[in-house]
Length: 146
Ligand code: HEC
Image (cartoon, rainbow, N blue to C red; front, side, top):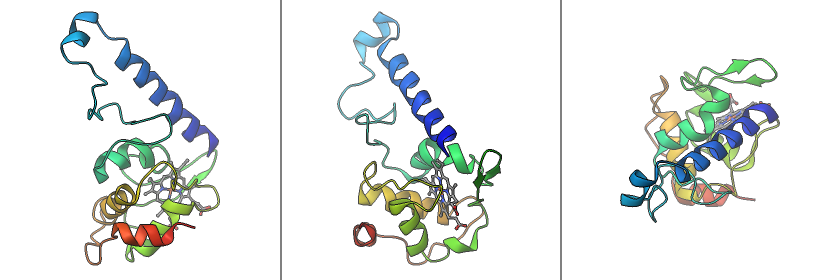
């Protein structure tokens, strides 16, 4: 678990550096870090800026569960989210993303209620999953916070 997460952090740091270190001409017209521009993915060093489920998945979950959601076995075991029947009820993935599960860290402090609902609903209705009934709501996420 340490490796993918630290890799993500390292990639993010590189992206942040790159964003602030582009050609001076291009940067001066439209600064990459203008307020409201979430293209680099972080609004601070400790929170993610994406609001959209697909973008959140790509930025956070894909590093361990893989972009196609099929998981991986290597230094650890990263279960597949693709075709995973445990995603049928929203409460389970909400609980996992908020509080973590053994080798998976929780994201309670890095994501707000709406972001967690968005990424949970995205994995429930993508990656070969079609669980669109009873989507997770921000208030469900709030209730899962300990
Ligand atoms: C640092 C690696 C890592 C990241 C990042 C990560 N996960 Fe996980 N996830 C895991 C591991 C490892 C497990 C298995 C935990 C266990 O059972 O011991 C897991 C388990 C899960 C499960 C339970 C699957 C099951 O079959 O019980 C869900 C749901 C899940 N992750 C969703 C997500 C979502 C959504 C994100 C992005 C917000 C995410 N994970 C980010 C490593 C990660």
